[in-house]
Amino acid sequence: EVLTMLRSDDQGTVIDPDIDRLVAARGDTAELRYLEPVTAEALHRCGALEQTTIYRFVQEAITNAVKHAPGQKVTIKVGFDEADGHLELTASNPHTGLAPAFRAGAQQLVTGSGLGLLGLRERMEAMGGDLTVTTTPEFTLRARIPIDSAVLTDDDSEGAAGTAGSPDEQERP
Image (cartoon, rainbow, N blue to C red; front, side, top):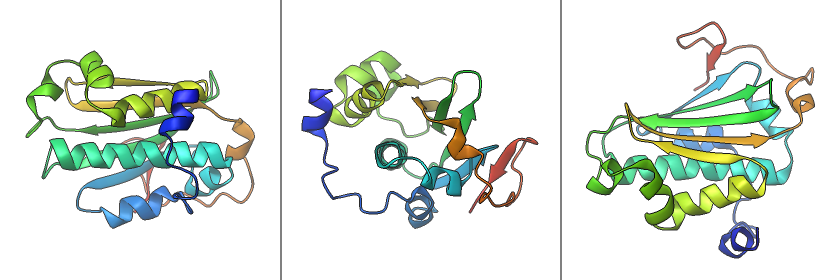
């Protein structure tokens, strides 16, 4: 936890942790999908720590895609596991263009590739969640953080913007 705080650069630098805006700014590189019952509005009802952590996950996913798989789009999904009360964040992109270190193995990625993924893992664990990295069949970051399910059931939620592949999956521009 202390390492997370020391490595944190969130003292005022993330004024508006709006992942929709972050992804929209990188539309050529990233796409964002909300899985029912998660919506953008629901994420704005999360606490500041949760919002910043979600933002940092998306930011790291985009950074990794640009750096290690140029020209490949990263798909970011935000869902909720009702069974254990965790928000699930997944980012995946094809391997094409990945650096050799990224093909060497997921554990090496988390422990030996600099502070980006390591810092993200520490951030997730400090919140009671976790981060996993897999490299087959695609490069995938998967994070889980506990959140209060009540933020997902507020009546202010707007309807679906469209579906993307399955009945419980919503895609938002």
